[in-house]
Image (cartoon, rainbow, N blue to C red; front, side, top):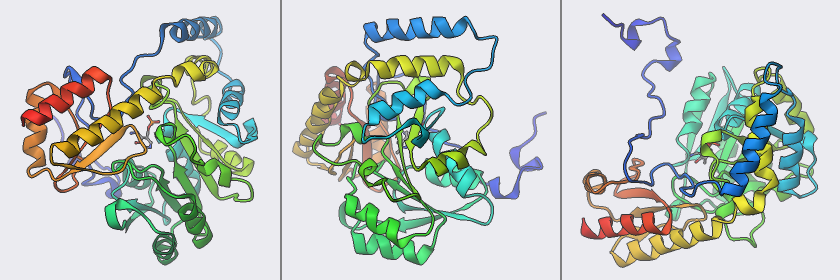
Length: 357
Ligand code: PMP
């Protein structure tokens, strides 16, 4: 006999929630969770292995709790005169966001995001005991300065999530919206730049807004552009006082010595690790152009994925693609599906399968 979840003395506020559950099935073409489908280049893999080998020599000891070398690596990579005391990292940006929620959210507090947005924001918020408030977006999922500021002012949240570009829609977020939301709020404003490296090169990151804004946090991840999803490394930049707050909630030694070594080695090869970004952006634009030619409506994307609408029966189309070995994502937006840009070959497989539906 096995117990049912609802029979357990689980926290009342967790009853009825469903866990994050994007299907993990071994299909030949997996374009459903916005991974970088290009493997790490062999010369970088060799250096990562060397780093891990060295770390193994001291694996009997706890790792550097302050992951000093890694924070320096992120500061160098991000530029903008950032220093390591402004950097934090954890096991994926999901954990980074969780740390922010643990330190600045929690019971009796609220977090806010403009729906539809990254599905983990409400889950992380509720799991850390706070309430999630959903705002709304305008035409084609965009946000205007006045409307965004008014919604945040009305909700008075302790934490605001701004996903830039937004998942699952790909929508860019102008810097003046971030400034307006910051000015309209009293809490922490997190700009989640998980997909930033896929945005046009000439655009300015929210990192440029950090000076003088001690409640602003900009998070990034190595999971997407760096092709490092399996290693679980995310990071953020913020005022050193914010970093001090995060130290209060992290578990001691939360980043393993193996993770620190692997991430530091990968960062030393940032240009090589990022060389596939242009190729992925080209495949993303090819998806947008081709689905449009097929009669669908792609939404503007600054990320490594495309949301397209005009799908009469998303569940049926999703299944038809699945049956042809192509896994994409039904994100629950009416008449829409989301697909990640793959290698040229994977992208072709998706586009051919979609054309045959
Ligand atoms: N933020 C956004 C917007 C995402 O789409 C994702 C991953 N899908 C994450 C954060 C978390 O990524 P990770 O934990 O792998 O860094």
